[in-house]
Length: 295
Image (cartoon, rainbow, N blue to C red; front, side):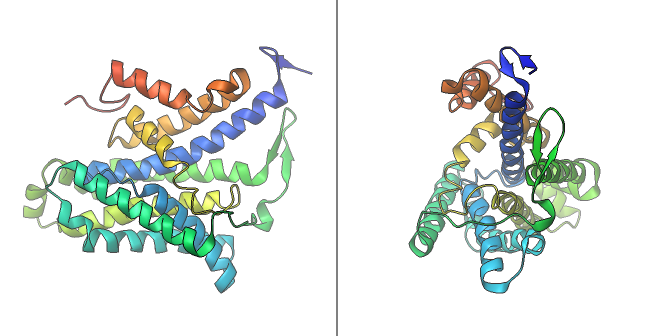
């Protein structure tokens, strides 16, 4: 059997796959956070709750409406995005112009409210959600056996992340978003409805969390606690990549997922803290993050 640094190749590749899957969720969630903070300057602590809502929306669409995975992959992010837009329009908008702390406290309270509501109705044990028939089973790659659904998660996450980056960096809509970040008053003067732009941006960021939730539903059990278990790590990813940096969120998410997977092979005791150790080092050496701009 092939060994690498004393570790069997299949075991090493298996842990790398686990790290890449975790990195896929880190990248999707941190991407949504970066989009929201980049334009709204809101630290959206409710992002984990929207991730949980996406998973529960997929589960409820199946349980109560008979809509399977592929339909849920389209509808659940839309439901979460509309919910996010309603929250931005009715509540979050009142906090613009105030200190970032107010937005953080509001979204933290919103996360607790959503999580508590779902815990009341569904408990904490979690609900199973099966992978679609077309993605069940595994493929033997020779050096490892790749579960088909895990491969789909990585591929779908990469396509969504790169597509979002391309829209923001290469299209006129993205140009409006970036311009509104710098000078909203000037963009408004050119006829762009900035309040609507803010609402759609927040809804889009929440929809990204919803997509991650649907992708996660067959991998993890659908539970009210699934968002709170992940959001702290995702915030660390965003800080390392640079607050508001789209490219930083994507690259850092995948990178830290892989580093975490390697840690589980070579030094398992550090696997749960390696992301936070890296965050501390980055903050000491480059406070703006790896891809952030120094102010």
